[in-house]
Length: 375
Image (cartoon, rainbow, N blue to C red; front, side, top):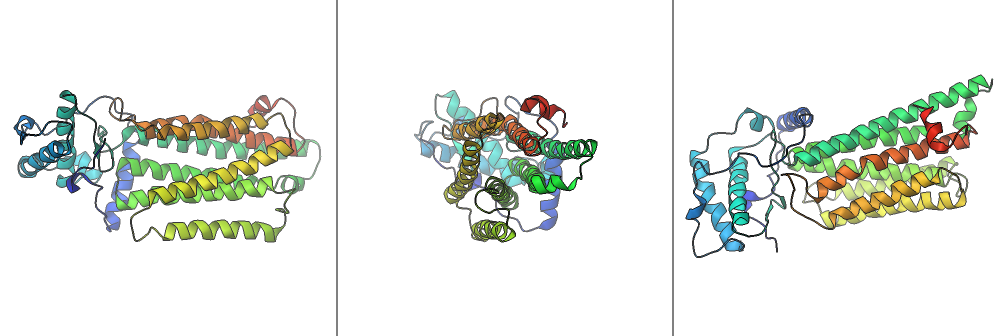
């Protein structure tokens, strides 16, 4: 059983100061490049609090003991603990938040030492803080995911250039590129939108604030919605009249209005995490079904790239079902999920490039070796 902790350990309060938002974002971007923390940090409350003083007839493993430990630690911390250092202040840590973190680490260590259980901190596992980052492993892997999507955008651009060069070599007009494969611009936008979404994820895992949480969730909503629109447009181009402008406008409009209403509903209140999960899964499944139908109707040698990446994406998402406390200070189920997705995104971009080459009749080699010519 895992229980919630007192308000002092809860989700950090909302802030409406634009300057603070900008400062936190910039500092998180800088710190995210510093690397991955391993092991435990030295930030504890032992300088001003003796955890053995927590008696009250309670034993570690009970709600009452953890509450008592946090309550008895927080007061001395606020009185005797110095102000957070430069790095912590840069990333937006207040004295109250720093004390909550320090006291939780101390109480959790005592809990485990006496054979107790892991507890959650503000709805999350108590990760080892590194350079002000709350979840350093998730930050690092979010940055890696974003880098893969930037690479995907570059791969798509190079594939376009290669296709144009080959058309030129054959003394063909370049206009057939848009006529035969008019999906490249949407796929390029998708790659850059995903890059920004993963950047927002890194910022959120760096510091969990009202603003950064919504930046992360809304960016992810928009990225999945655009991916759905891009996939449905490509998959239905020859079967459900998606080549017609009114059909594209209808599908795009319905998708935009739907995700817009979903986002608007949580602007002024707490995000409904369960509903958001269902919305995201629904869009992902719709995207997958569109491509599955396309691949079954068009049996091509490179389809395995889609099947592999798609199945493994769902398998990676299932990692979060088995929630477990962080290993090496920050590797929890969520971080492991982020670690699993970069190679799968890479495979999907390979699939899109192979799809382009097939449609243009530029299939010179097997898909993967042919793709190397587009890099």
